[in-house]
Length: 178
Image 1 (cartoon, rainbow, N blue to C red):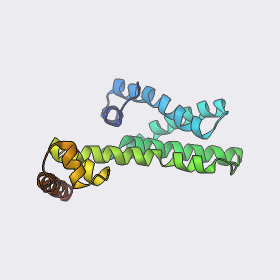
Image 2: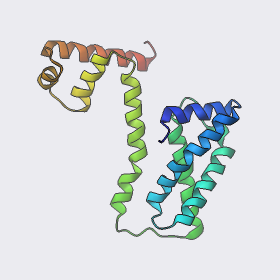
Image 3: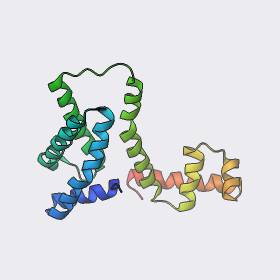
């Protein structure tokens, strides 16, 4: 089972604070993530994948002081991995064929989409479950107020009020008032 963003972040912070066990667990948890990251981009180059995994783990270790504890860890780790992959391409002067470029570019947005989902989940976690679900239904999933009311077994007015109050609470949290 892969470690979650929160688990990885906690292990990294523990490692930065001197917990060798947490840091060792972090590096071990990064191996499958990095293998997957490089494996998707370097199909058929297993030796290069393993080399890049090791290079990235060393870079994570040597650059760990640059990690901002208030930011998502995986975004930082994947940025390190991306730079290692770019260095690899420069060293080997490999050219990526144009065929399949669309698939590669779509995959590049994967980490950003994951981070966005985590950010939304974290934000909605700070308000009531009812408000969070109705905001998901109406603002993220695109349901109408009537559809959300039917799904939730409530009146349309209740949906409108709950969404309004939820958005107001989120805005206050983002402004640092909540």
